[in-house]
Length: 200
Image 1 (cartoon, rainbow, N blue to C red):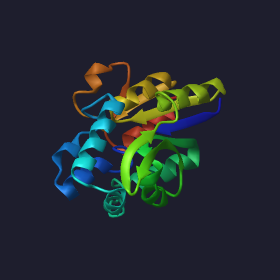
Image 2 (cartoon, rainbow, N blue to C red):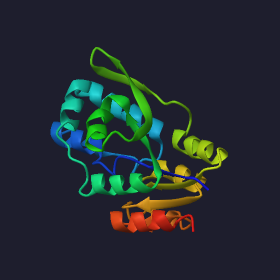
Image 3 (spheres, rainbow, N blue to C red):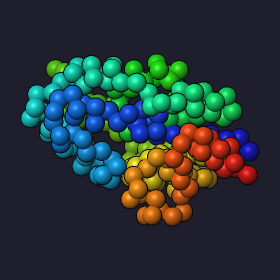
């Protein structure tokens, strides 16, 4: 059977963008991510309120992103993975945020959201569909692909559970006990070995 590997982006291949923005601006409320808040709509609504209150523009966020490196070993891991399988990044990031990382990662296939922006201010976002990560996995499976998925946060769990095989990668310690049905990996070597063996 043909295989597709689906990966989250932030926390798996790249740093968490919002934490970097929080560090740059000094606005601690922006440090909350999907590792702590499983309701993505609620999380984004709060982020947009905070950005507005502190007059933080899209341009400033993009400037912060442009300084960020990949996680150590991420490009090598992804290149190795892409030499073996079809790989798709399923992320709750945004088109307006992702360009810098896509260049660093060698332009992999990315499915994500799009921000709504008015005069350089983020006013909302446009998810393509409810729970797009899970829906993408279900769509690939409906095409008779074996789907192997990895992610690190609450918002990845439905994707991981919908896949033929799902793995929590470098996740918060509180998460794996909640989902004992999912595999766990802490390093890229462990994750690659798990992916290679997941269809066995």
